[in-house]
Amino acid sequence: MDKKIAWTILILILTGCSINDTHTASKVTQPFCIPDSLMNQIKTDTISFRPVVEELKLIGKVTFDQDKVVKLYPMVSGNVLEVNVALGDHVEKGQVLAIVNSAEIAAAENDIVSAQANLAIAEKNFSSMENLYKSGIASEKEYLAAGNEREKSRSELNKVTTVLSIYGGAHSHYIIKSPISGFIVEKFINPNMQIRPDNSTNLFTISDLKRVWILANVYESDIAGIAEGEKAGVTTISYPGKIFAGTIDKIYNVLDPDNKTMKVRIQLDNPDNMLKPEMFANVVIQQVKDTTMLAVPAKSVVFDRNKYWVLVYRGRCNVQTRQIDIVKSTSLFTYIRSGVIPGEKVIANRQLLIYNAIAQ
Image (cartoon, rainbow, N blue to C red; front, side, top):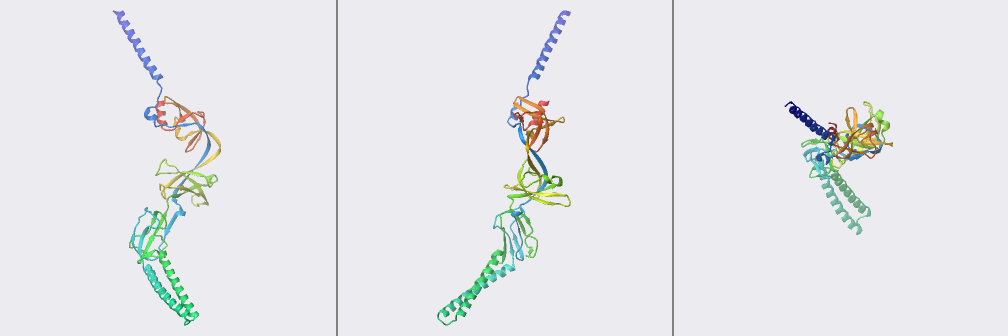
């Protein structure tokens, strides 16, 4: 009886060990494979030698392209009857912005009526004098005098007509029209307001925002590294991840006495009107050097345990974590001293999820 119990216990022990060994072996030999749902999202980049780029980071703001800004001032005095636009509205060239009831326009219209009447009289007198001159009744002096009066009347009519066309008036109304297409970026006029031409405040400011300026501050220590024609990348809080490309086209060679910075101007195309005046802007100036180094996309690098890592991709079920020794990083690339070789592929997005799965 004791022998049967002993054999039973031995068989159970051996069987249990076999099961445990099989389970352990399956855990060791099973490789990590990227799931299908994640595989469709990842991107890879090839490790290669790239030109070394130095980056200078500046802070600035968006402002108008001053070459495409128009300020409208009152040309006559009067009472504002209506204002047809609001701040921020887009207007077309020739669009009526406001209408002002003006005594000066009424006077100019009366001057035109008087000038037309005077011209009609002068034309009639000249015609009569011409007939008398041809008949020998009137002298040449009288004939020439009548012609001069006719020309004076014509000149006066042209003058008052031109004045009224400059004012843009009709029916005692001063009509303010937009000289360009753009956005109303300033508005200092309201209905029932009295305006005068001697007032230094403009009524409207219109800007074409298809092109804007970035005015950025450069500290004294960085002035030597700035030059006209250098490319710049601009980012804003409003559009995270969106990089606007521009060029430094002007350097203001004067330092601000308060903060000891020099301003540079960057011109940007703004076809979708995404950039608005007074927006805060981060500017990165990239200066390409003559040397090259091994580089990977900066976003592909993982920082963990005070070390830098990349995921070397050789297949869906063959992904390696590789420690790298970096030299420097920019917003686009991380330059590597050792740890990888040219031609290897690294995972350039979603790498943190895969890294955590492998490191478990």
